[in-house]
Image 1 (tube, rainbow over the protein chains, first blue to last red):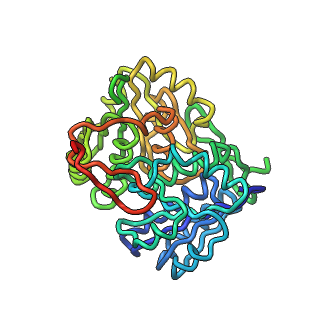
Image 2 (tube, helix red, strand yellow):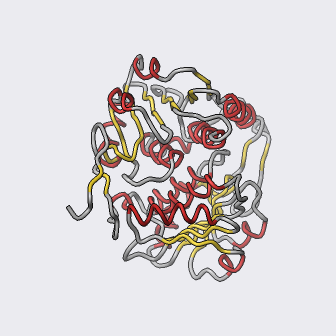
Image 3 (cartoon, rainbow over the protein chains, first blue to last red):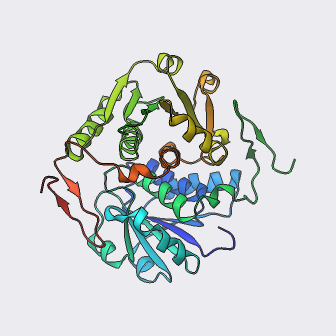
Amino acid sequence: MQDEPEVVVLRLGHRPGRDDRMTTHIGLTARALGADRALFVGDASQSRETVDDITARFGGPFEAEVIESYRPVIREWDGVVVHLTMYGERVQDVEADLREAHAEKPVLVVVGAEKVPFDVYEEADYNVGVTNQPHSEVAALAVFLDRLFDGRQLDREWDGADRRVVPMETGKRVVDPDE
Amino acid sequence: MQDEPEVVVLRLGHRPGRDDRMTTHIGLTARALGADRALFVGDASQSRETVDDITARFGGPFEAEVIESYRPVIREWDGVVVHLTMYGERVQDVEADLREAHAEKPVLVVVGAEKVPFDVYEEADYNVGVTNQPHSEVAALAVFLDRLFDGRQLDREWDGADRRVVPMETGKRVVDPDE
């Protein structure tokens, strides 16, 4: 988010067709919950387009990019690398350290597919489990970002939106942000 | 969770084939993050089987059920009905009320597909937005449950598991829970 070291979500193991929707949800979750960029490894141009379209309509800044290889991104990351995995340390045990680290350094959040190569576990500064149960990489990312930002991402503002949803007890209200 | 009024996740609008993976992720997220049951509306037997299989291996109690119609469930719910929607009130504004309500009453969390019929908005006691941005029903459910339970679901114990993941800084370790 603005005025903070950046948070980037790196999505590994995208399989075109089969994973389009999950990858899109990872990108949209990254955007909605305070990350600055999402990197999709592999042929994920459809997911990138969907995320770009939402950013164009609902605002940014947020960047989605398709990249060919994750290894240089992890290896050259100038900050903290967090890999979300059900085998990792418990999020409740490491989140305070991670918030402290993020106050000073960019954070790369690596979100895997079913089989993550072992070098990712080794290169990560933290392997973190949002529970040690099998569930969903989207759910794990969402809880992780909410805790990393300590909820303040819910108050972020959006630039360049052409619409804004007004919170309502019942019903749907969408307005022009300039009105 | 044990010793608390139950929390049930109701997944609307399942389309067989197209939605299997999202519905499965909703069920697994419900289980991992403290809900007691998941109800899938429509022909979601494949998702139910996957969730049941995870419960058999990693423990419970957790129930997944396939139902035909959501309307009687919502109408006859003896407790609080929360519908997660990007058009709803901000989660940060209502979560304290919901935690208080859940101390005494069961909570039904309704998670929709793209088009949710208007009667769901009207029948819900709360329409709640985990951000007023479009992202992912799985992400919204995850953040909502984490906040409803105030993180204590991360410490829940599992009965009847035949394996347990031991949190690790690096690598994967799975043990027999009785050892």
